[in-house]
Image (tube, rainbow over all chains, first blue to last red; front, top):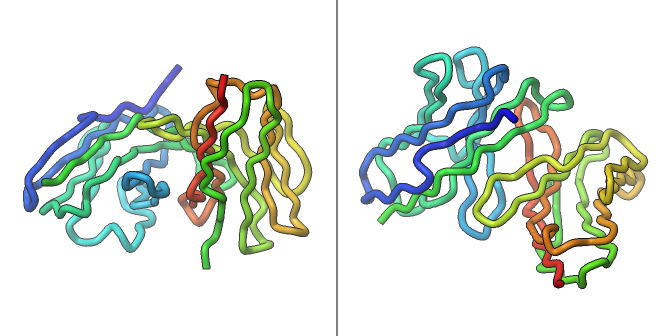
Amino acid sequence: EPEVTQTPSHQVTQMGQEVILRCVPISNHLYFYWYRQILGQKVEFLVSFYNNEISEKSEIFDDQFSVERPDGSNFTLKIRSTKLEDSAMYFCASSEGTGNTGELFFGEGSRLTVL
Amino acid sequence: QKEVEQDPGPLSVPEGAIVSLNCTYSNSAFQYFMWYRQYSRKGPELLMYTYSSGNKEDGRFTAQVDKSSKYISLFIRDSQPSDSATYLCARPKGQNFVFGPGTRLSVLP
C-alpha cells in the first residue's frame, strides 16, 4: 500500500540552527501539506502546496519557514533559525484532491527537539 | 471561535463496550466531516468520512452527523484494546483541513 514517508524520524538541534525535514508524498497525489503537533496539543495546519507553489499557509508559517519540492518526489520543510517553541512533531501529508474530494494521508512524523 | 471542539478525555472503557465519541462544530454550513485515529507517536489515519446528515457505517464504526444540533458522533461497537488511540474529528477548510483537539480513548482488556 502506498504511503507517505518522512525523514528523519527524530532530530535534535540547537536553538538558532537550520533544520530541513523531508517527505516523500504518495506518487499520484497532487496536494501536499505540513502539519505540526506540539506534545499534548492538537494537530495544526502549517502550509499546503500545489502545482509547485504554496496554496495556503497559517499564521504559524512565518518567514522562518519555507517549503520546497526540489524534484518530482521530495517535499521539504525548512526552518531557518529554530526556536525552543518549534519543538514538536511535524507531519507531512498528501492527498489526491482537496476539501470534499481529498482524503489526507499522513506520514509517521518527524520529531523535532530544539535545545 | 473554535471551529471543531471535542472533549479531550481520557475516556476509559472495558473491552466489548460501545464507545461514543463526539464533536461539536460552530458553522451550520459545514457539511463534510472526517474521523481520524491517531496512535501514540504516529500520524493520524483516516477512519471514515461523512457528508451532511445521517449515518455511515463501516464494520464496527458508525459515523453520525446531526446538523440541527451541529453534533458529530463516532460509535465503536465491541471495542477492542487495539482501538486505544486518540480520535480526531476534522473538516475541510479551503485547501486544507481543520482538526479538533482529539479524544483519548483507552479500551481496557
